[in-house]
Image 1: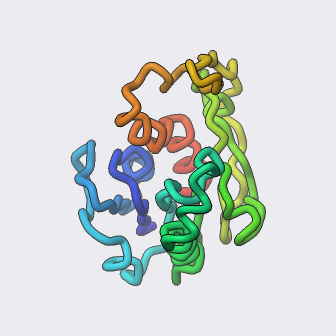
Image 2: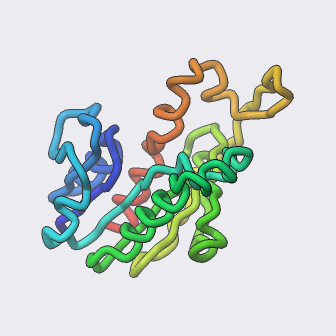
Length: 193
């Protein structure tokens, strides 16, 4: 299959599908972390190029409920609507099979509830990170290896966050959190490919 992994700089999902023999491409405005088939630029430039499947990771910065305290300003200046519009372009792309991934976000009410919420600990990683999947012509992902949910840290602010990224510098947390866990990427390739 010809597979587009939209908004992926890491190459993790792309390479999981490539390992199964698929013609997999990642696309992001950032360069890829892992050498391979990667289009650096706007996904809208290539979205109509005859893909059989797309796994999309649209930016969640203006959608995730973790940033709810900033929603009023983001609505006022249009950033939230831009995020919603981009998410909807992904889910409505002219591609037969689509998975759109995002954290817990306003898309559950603006669009619809996700078809599934997965966790890294269901796929062999001792970490917690609620990840929503909106699916079109794809089955839900089945857990491949259930392990411990991992440890949590308490920040000075009183907020409790998963320990796996709590010690990272704040400026790097976004990139760390947006990388797909290998076990999830492998499950996608195995079960959807």
